[in-house]
Image 1: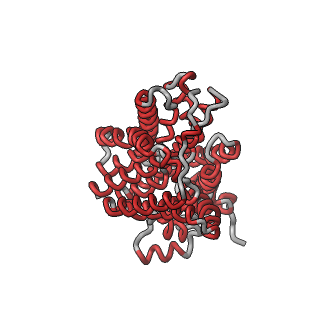
Image 2: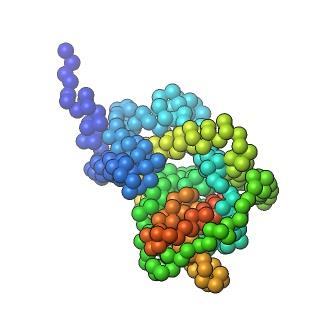
Image 3: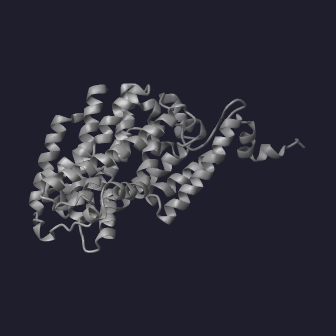
Length: 401
């Protein structure tokens, strides 16, 4: 009878023992972090739609390392670096998440599907309430997207890498995924992971930024709901068709994202309930689920120990902080230009993490004045933020690719 060692049966433990101590410690830390993400997502502290599948994926992939051969360790989840056709065909028949990764994630399709779903649940009429103010605030909220680029270059990143991490300032996960796939494919995995980790923190971090920069009496300014104009379906569809065509003409490199977003809006306004129910439900939430799961399983110890990751973490939080400050500055400018009748908290909604920053803005306003409602104007700035972040991503990709 052959002699069987204990660790030979439990290969996850065997690879932990056989690994470099730094890798082993990182695996344990990431397992613990993944479990924490599940808990914080379920509790509502972090975004549950992303963090629960991401946390489960992260803890699983770092636990399930096995010996693939006498000299190589790995997992049976996904190989993000497989691109050569023969090797890819082999991996597609082995790694169970590889088909989803290869055919939806690594080519940016999943970003387009999420944008399509976001379009279906977005009422563009909010943007048409006050389009110029909303667009001004959205542009101001791109401060982090613009200023982080020279900071990243000064810290030693290439132009393409700097542009990719700067897009975290847009607070738009699919946009970061799209840009990093185009410009920095070799490090798009850590950039995308950093982006989604931080986007979940907008729930927890931006309220403190609002309270720090905007006094309570200004947070409580009431907006006049009677001044909100009604917008017809025909006007919304006309706007979506014209703006989509114009943006695709000017920035064709981002045309898949523009088309997906505005197609979703057009489907919403067309009233085709079969499409609306499918795209706004199973397609959107299924794509979000697999995005979170794939981000988790890509978060292996070897990836996180890339020496650039610490730099990306610093630059990512810098980009989001600057964008939040920029949005609030934009809110203050509109407040003064409106004769002090515009609530400056709306500025934070220019950061295009739709609808998170709008909900954060409304919650902070309501805590200062329970009768104040700013959500329609915040959603308008939020929608403009999606559009401006896509434009900046298109400019970066066009100039640098």
